[in-house]
Image 1: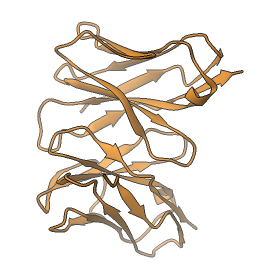
Image 2: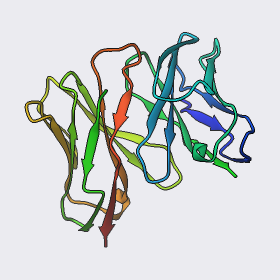
Image 3: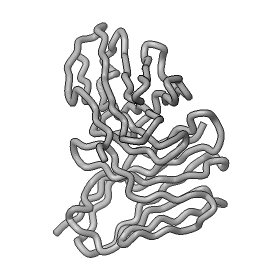
Image 4: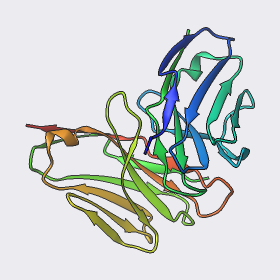
Length: 112
Length: 114
């Protein structure tokens, strides 16, 4: 059984740019959640996708957006990057909503 | 919304000793409490969880206790080993809302000294 995979693992952007992060959910899982983890902090919920629709959102501005595809993979897009967006972005999938979350290794974004 | 506080932020124990990490939550409607272990450069890994209808759950050297009245839950690791060294996060999930997202504590860096 393949776990949650994320790409890219590391990337560097400059302030004002846009970034797309990708996630493949674990086999059999139809729900994907995205979390932001700043250095030394616990993960913070960004949003969740279930059956290709946004199913809930945390306290993040609209420049954070996402997609879920028919194969349940997902993208996180961040526009107009700010320095504070530097963080580890974690994707987690679950068999249903709600359900046990299984996390990927994350994408480490550095904004200069 | 839910707020989870976790203590201590760092914990060092001798190999073979026990380690205890404590968390409190604010929303009495929360009903699911997982614990995650995060090793350096990796994503969080679910190690144990407990639901609000249970007071204690054990899995080999790991146990979790839940006190709903006091709104706190704890992770207990016995016979610690160097490979237990990692950052541990507690989390709570609300019982209502569409996403029922997890709210995480700020983490505990556990170091097991050989």
